[in-house]
Image 1 (cartoon, rainbow, N blue to C red):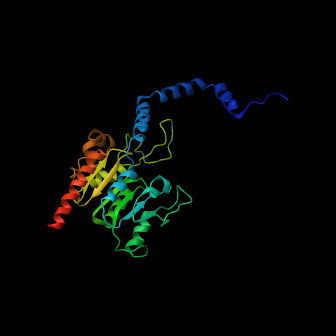
Image 2 (cartoon, rainbow, N blue to C red):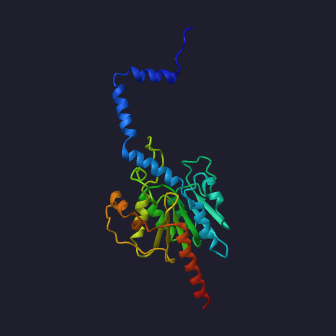
Image 3 (cartoon, rainbow, N blue to C red):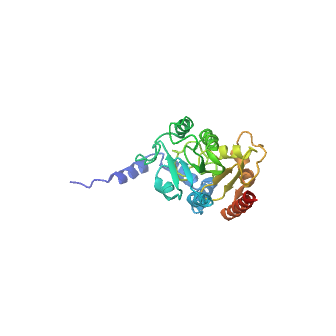
Length: 274
């Protein structure tokens, strides 16, 4: 019996026999050497290497409380990624289970359905108020915006809304469809930044974005973490956003954020006792 070419070798042979081989090779070479591709890959690795992670930030915020804490996570997926490591007296997860089939969460449903049931007193209690609500569900601006609006009706007066993926390094990371994958890699932040930027323009809340872990956005009614900006980028163009990224997101490092919050908490506690 003669030598049988393995499938992979046969596929290479088919490519070499293809009259368009040189054209394919030239296209691939130009693609991999494209400056935008190289920059995007580099920024992906750099962002992925940053610390602290969202878990550390959430646990810091919960640690500010001297009493029983209530935590809600929208978009749990694999609970080992974040949820299981959160230190709260009471914590609840919401996820429809599309990306993680076992889905060991409290409420196996979309966030829209969960909040609708919560407000109608069909799950938990419509009187419950959370210290921290973490939003990491469907990364489309319209959905994130609804999640923020609903969450604001469920947090304590001095509570926090935390969002993941608010600082996409490039326009590729901020694409609308996550399934596109090429040598740039599969990292995806979606259009979460648009929803967060919309609330950055809202004077009714205070906002900032911690410059780590793909951008951890913070929204508060009470804590002076960042004043609103003027809505100059009304069509949410990425390049306009990128040109003034630090101000648009109110980017701060974690240590600066901690100092601001601890200082405000200390002042607030003194005021309570006066």
